[in-house]
Amino acid sequence: MFVEPFRYERAESLSDACARLRDSGGTAKLVAGGQSLLPMMNLGLVELDVLIDVSRVTEARGVVEEEGYLRIGALTRHRDLETDPLVARHQPLLAAAARHVGNARVRNRGTVGGSLAHADPSAELPLAMTCLGAEYELIDGALARVVPAHEFHVSSFTTELADHEVLASVRVPTLGPGWGWGFQEVSRRPGDFAIVAAAALVRTAGGEMVESRVALGGASDRPIRLGAVEASVTGARAEDLEARIGPVEGLDPVTDTNATAEHRRRLARVLAVRVLADACRRADEAA
Image 1 (cartoon, helix red, strand yellow):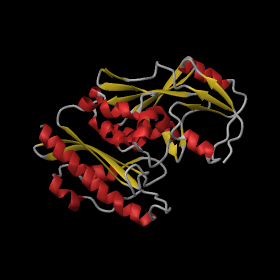
Image 2 (cartoon, one colour):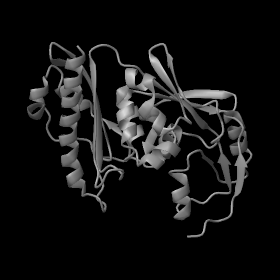
Image 3 (cartoon, rainbow, N blue to C red):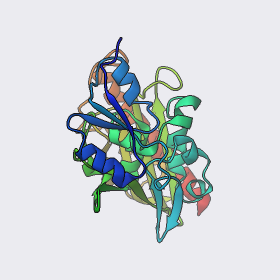
Image 4 (cartoon, rainbow, N blue to C red):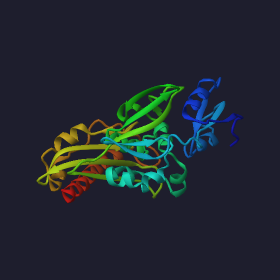
């Protein structure tokens, strides 16, 4: 399919990108790795007047440790999350989620910010960030605001990002003692979009869960926390999860070529049990 003509520009900084978005005079998009935007342009699903390249901006790359947080630059590649020692030490759930993204080519080109701003409801990183309680820093030139992950992801391919804003970085709380994690997904083939994916964090004491976070992707129009499931497993052990967790409520799955809505509902419960069990095991091993 032929792509409609557009103007190409290269931004030298994130502030420059904001200014170019504001001055574009039409529909403008940022491109970094291009693993989501360019295929949609080729399919005719996205038409734009200006394409602003931020791939050479260096200020928004890498992972740094702050007081109780990891700050991840929006232009950090998926592959970097897989291999970064700070991520492996302080938030291994992120590394596990990144390993499920696409294939090696996609992970070496695609960026954290690109995936989060694209907001595919089946994508791994929005799910992981929602489970972790991450915060996104959005900038509009000299102004900045912070939006929690669960508020940023509004619905399918829709976010709280304003027209002239850029996602600059992500703040992820680090894990303390006694926490474990779990991440699993079901897809037709490795590298395909998840039919349903699940992520969990659990803190245990004496083998019992005293605090948990569990979230699903692919089962609604955005990643969702399962508050009722979290409440139901408080005080449970890993072997109690099958009896404690019933059908997952509050989902809005779709039927498509990959799975029916009912199949997604069944997978939601199965994966919630599995990731919580994995998280319990890792928490007990770390105790």
